[in-house]
Length: 97
Image (cartoon, rainbow, N blue to C red; front, side):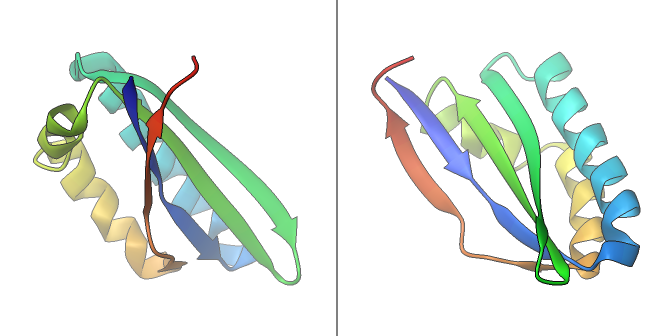
């Protein structure tokens, strides 16, 4: 069983490009440098004047996600949070790959 993290962000259209660049950098660094990060997808739903950006992050376990929280690339991404409205993060257990 893997540990899934689903953060969601609401981003104004004029801030979307910069936000996605920061998200891409975080996702790429997570996959390249964190052995416990198995998948990190960034998806966008546009409409209603806001873009809804969802991360689909899969880690080997909660400890791997906790290690992710301490990384420099996540610290850098946190600066991008000023460009959005962060929604409550959902945590799930992945039971089927």
